[in-house]
Image (tube, rainbow over all chains, first blue to last red; front, side):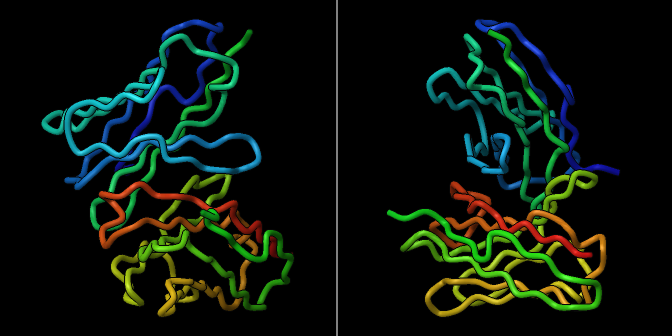
Length: 106
Length: 115
């Protein structure tokens, strides 16, 4: 049983499209993190959420603690957004989703 | 500030050997976490350290161990290597005592291949 489920697994979008990636979790958490991993392995932390909503540029992350669900939105997607997006939650240890591979086509 | 550094970047070992990987956190960061990433299992949590104390541990066998030094640098050791230990090992540092509530900064990883 996976503590963290992400959808979709793969996503292809045209440049400029609005993108949503979903994350559901089954454990009680202290926080949820969204990570971005580009080809070559480097991981960057995009957001840390414990409630509500956060926005950085074109990226928006929301969390609903009662429903145990979070979404990552990318507005006006760009080819440089092509990466794997990973949801992670901390419940004692960290649990990770399997990632969403996003490809944005020019 | 320099980022998180990991050494070595690439390593090839044979089954049965042991290996030690090193992680130097961002200056001033006191929390270090280790992760294993494989194509089949994705990212998995290994350990979390703060001020030389292991705060949390993932579901890995006792062959995987780690420690943190007084300068916050951390090492992880894998003994009796198995083929399935081939993976990218990532280290991340954060400022405070609770990695869940701080932004984590990831190193480039050590790519371990076990033959």
